[in-house]
Image 1 (cartoon, one colour):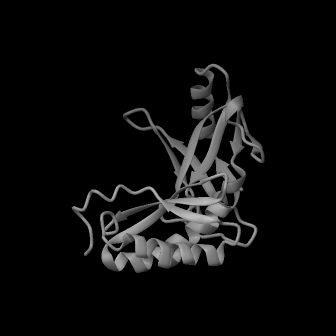
Image 2 (cartoon, one colour):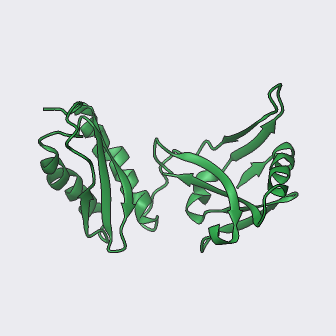
Length: 191
């Protein structure tokens, strides 16, 4: 799946030894499969482990990998290189931003895929974008508009006639969308 080099293992083991109550590291990707994907490594305490996490040993350390992130971490490399300033931990995950969406993908992944591959290219013509903030328990997608869409007088039309329609057609379990953008800032709005 992914590799943690020996130098990175030793570096992480040293960091972990200085922490109380830490079981290992948690590896995950924020917004996987989107242009904004970010690969993250964090200390992992017992409360941080989520159902479905995969536990993997890398020499002296244990990595808990978020199940949703697993396909996006394929071929990833975590490395540590010493330098004059001490050193640098690097994470290269070439598949983090690639869309890997199927009908059984998590709802967040399917929504992000639609937003970044279908909706945002259309909004970009007006300098705008929309992103997923969260999915509520009652399956409502909370969205935030930015760029030329923030403060635009047509955002309600865009939300209901475009974004919501596309999402509801392609993600049947979704019950609706809600915009949490502060549209009082009209400095970048497209008119």
